[in-house]
Image 1 (tube, rainbow, N blue to C red):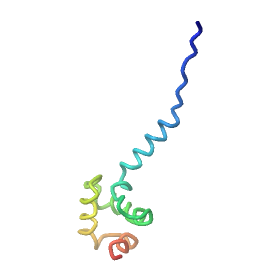
Image 2 (cartoon, rainbow, N blue to C red):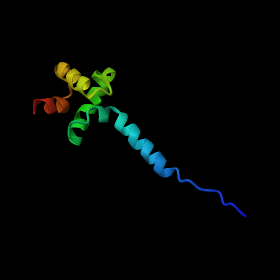
Image 3 (cartoon, helix red, strand yellow):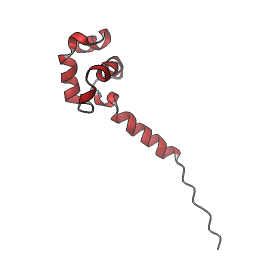
Image 4 (cartoon, rainbow, N blue to C red):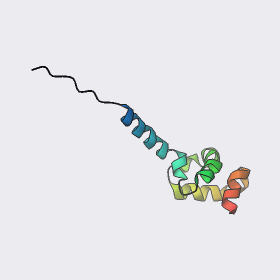
Length: 80
């Protein structure tokens, strides 16, 4: 009785892990907005509010407190 080794593809696991890590990043922390809003504010989250990651409410409050220091693009998100 020859047993063949079972081959497990690691690609789906690696893709799932990559997605999970992406979702756990600051982009996910600001996940309430549109993709454009997240792109506009993600650098500011890292620069001004990194200590609040991953708490979305705390990040949003931090960005509001830091409004004078926000990039032009992120400030526009909060002025909408």
